[in-house]
Length: 186
Image (tube, rainbow, N blue to C red; front, side, top):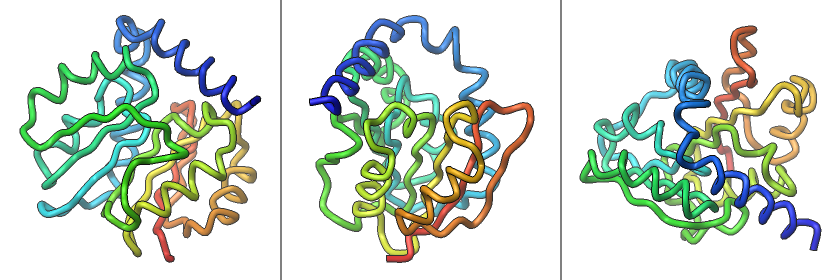
């Protein structure tokens, strides 16, 4: 029951912020995305997932570089905002879905972005295990975690416990998040 309450609270929060989210957070989110993209090498035939896609800020960084980009989010209103970004690309699909119960077969994504999400989930380990399930073996998984919620040590332990192999870790003082680029080894 507590898990549902947290999901519902997060969904309502982002529904309320949907119209002003980019005005309030776009600069911060884009700085995280740009920092993460330095460690990600996308291939034209890639299937990419943006878990907790929000308003679709990642789309312009990835949309023209891959075969398919799927964005999922729990908030219906924030997904409406993401449609504006998605319309600019022929290969972007949006779905309302929970990160812990992604509606995908196992091992289909080459790259997965989990940006500014895990602190909003009831159990971050469950979220990352689900992310790993839908990622191909050797897939790149980018995870950001708010520094005020996760120390570098706790984030590293979480990634290790969910069997993600850390390739790079950025803890730039100008960013509010730690940024981990990982590989799915299973």
